[in-house]
Image 1 (cartoon, rainbow, N blue to C red):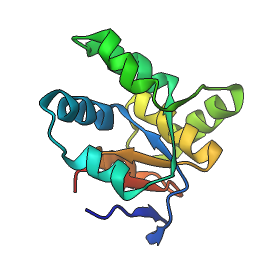
Image 2 (image 1 turned 90 degrees about the vertical axis):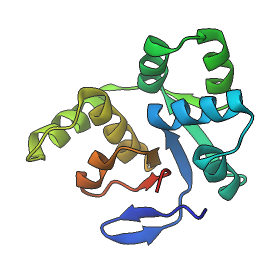
Image 3 (image 1 turned 180 degrees about the horizontal axis):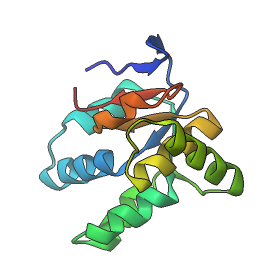
Length: 140
C-alpha cells in the first residue's frame, strides 16, 4: 500500500503525520487481532516519519475505548500536540468558509494540521473539502 498526501490537487510528501481517531480505531483493532491491515501498512510505508496525535484525538478515542489503558499505551507511542488560540482562530475561519461545516472535532484536527503544516491521516472523506489541507486517506 502506498499512501499519498494531497495538497491543492497535487501529491506531496508527508513530513509529519497527524493521526486521527479513525486511524487509531483501526490500528488498535489490528494490534488486538495481531493482524496487519491498512493502519499498520501506512506506518510501515512511512518509516522514520514523525507521527503526532492531537489532544482532541486522545479525548475522542478515550470516550469510546473499551480498554482505556491499552488505548493510552498505543497513543503514547506518538508525540502529543495541543491546541492554542492561533489554532482556535484558524478553526473558526475554516468553519466559516466551508459551505458545509465539518464536525467540531474534525475542524479542530484540520486547523491543527494546517497551523503546523502536518499531513492529516484519516479515513474521513470530509477532509477532502478543506482547502490547502494535506491529508492521507489510509483506508483507500
